[in-house]
Length: 406
Image (tube, rainbow, N blue to C red; front, side):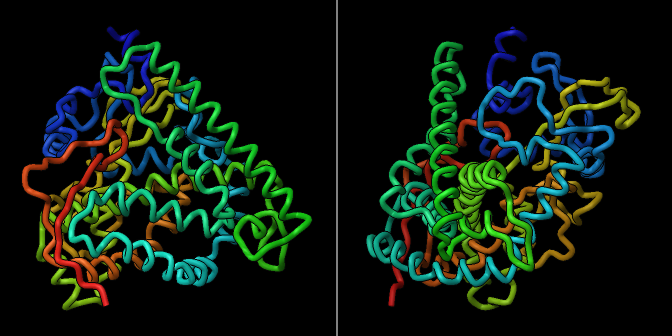
């Protein structure tokens, strides 16, 4: 059984305690039990350690001397070198990207996309109902990322098709042959995406444009240009981690608003709490439930010995609700401060896509709140979790509401 399990992608290996659909749609009671009775455990079937408490999770995420993100056998070709590299290469590359993606640049560029957001809402909101994931949460982040990078609209269909293939999650009970078929499709999509961005970036060197693709490969007084390979991998990162994080987060926001209708009215009455509400939404329903590290040396966590080479799964969704760090961690508090959640990781491997999610949320949440009132789930529809243990979201979110367009 263990051999069969280990042939599956990491996120599809059954996790003891999270095997049912009910547990995956709401894993937080399970996390709470683990923090209390089994904060560090070894799962023989998956050959992995599971870590549930905040301090242990944060230590592993930030301890680059004892834990690495390097994977001995990368099973799904989604992650790129920026994620996998360790210091000093990672540190240098990340620093250069952060200088290019400075807050002023992002705020200016994303604010210019507001009219595009308005156009999308104008086409979806008047109906008074929608399947939110399909109609908003998936197309909106893609549109924003594509315009930010400078991808011509004529190329959007191909780029979006490749992105869907890269994000495809096999069904839980899929057989090994189908898994291999999906991997082949993803490998081809990854190659097609990299080839496309390499061509676009080389074109920008000779014909600069007012877009992020140009900024990545041209030098100015504020930042050092990336080489073509580095810039290509960053573009792939935006199309995988960035797009997926933003899509899942928007879906989780709407789910929470459906569950707690008072949040919409609170935001209308107190628009100044938008920032803290976004952070609390990230803490409470993080797009990423867990991530993986590998032990570089023999190390102890909670007096348990973890041997060199061992796979360690840190459960961010559990750490985010640890009462030792967050007062009443299971309670949603829109004005919570401080809020040191780990939803985008911590340390050098903290998710670079966090800038995109936060900036996008600051633009679109007020628009959702203004144009859609009395949001509720369409009667007769339940929630189905996405097919992945490490990410948190729903496959569909059919909602009804009162349209409020100008």
